[in-house]
Amino acid sequence: MSTTQSDVSTILLDKVADWLTHSSLAGDNLETIVRGFCERIAAAGLPIARVNLSFSMLHPLYDALGFTWKRATGMTVEGYRHDPAGKPERFLLSPYFYLLSNNLEHLRRRIHADGPQEFPVLDELREEGITDYLAFLQPFGGQSTQGMMGSWSTDSSGGFSDHMIAALLRLQNHLAVAAKMAVLGKLADNMLTTYLGGNAGKRVLNGQIRRGDGETIRAALVMGDMRESTMLAEKEGRQAYIDTLNNFFDAIAAPFNRSGGEIMSFMGDGFLAVYPCGRHKDPSKLACDAALAAVFKAQARVAELNKERRGNGLNDVRYGIGLHVGNVMFGNVGLKDRLTFSAFGSAVNEVQRLQGLTKKYSREVIASQAFATYCGGEWTTLGEEKLRGVGQKVTVLLPKSTGETVQLEDGYDDVAYDGLSEAEQVMLLHRDKKTQRPLLEKFMQ
Image (cartoon, rainbow, N blue to C red; front, top):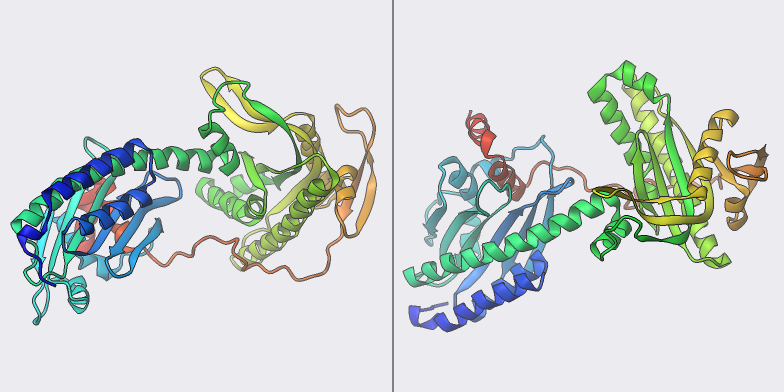
């Protein structure tokens, strides 16, 4: 491919800048902005063959988002999760690490047809026909912990001209502004969905933000709680107990955050999950069936966790789960300047008391008659109980397992950790400026 300076339209590149502004004001997401930007600069005449961009994200679960666009194949997107274990040699030998370790904003390398390259990635790019490579670091300004890092690559026989580089650097600033707006928008969504849950987060984003905003819904309810947590905390110590609690939630609570269910809140060493449904029999049955299936999944997962704990010389984690169905209020409560979005009402109080009865009956799971009526399978009646606040006694039941083997590896488990990716290594270093120098010195030892 051969492109001369006259092939690049300044007018069309200005249009790309205008499009970035409009896209940012419209609230487009980061993927839409990156994809549209790459397609437009290529259409404007810049001989871009490959673009790699990484964005640090203030997200409780993910540290960075990576985008790789190729003219021939389009764009791929990856989310990178933090795992402190891996420090791959590939990253230490990358242009990005060189930028960070030398406090540079740009690095350009021409890729010749033969001979060894300074960085291994350039050998790979040469095989793709790349002739010129420009890497960059673009902070989002001030003391922000978010930023953008990436590279532009061309397969033009003459490489990048000065005019092309000037155009890329100018557009890079416009892209950074649009990306920052998208990152901030994504940040709001990330925080709300991570801390409130997907459904509740969307409700808040859609305007349910005032105290008292909400509605009454029908739902299957699940209340779970760890047993003897105080003893575990005293025996294991603070950090070990926090790890145990997280492992417990991973095992027992994760199944209730799928298939129509949502974890509404974590309360100490317990949780509340809801399965919203319609007020008729069929939707109520679907919700209760889904909740009961999740119970069997949770029991299998905790059994696997305890098997692993016993192998490490640790005590089993014990728990209780209550199941109920009823009408709950779903919305904002609290102080005028400090709200929480949750489910509350008499049905929530009842499922909490049902969960407490697992101690009396020495059972892991107890359900109300109202819940069991909607579910298939066999149930064992344990007795009748007077729940505080409920006029009539409530029949409580124990579900019988179907005897079928529960498959643990079915998509519930999160992404496995294989060490840090190159993009994640980059963004972690970029974000933590205060510890950047000690980290770099450690890597170089």
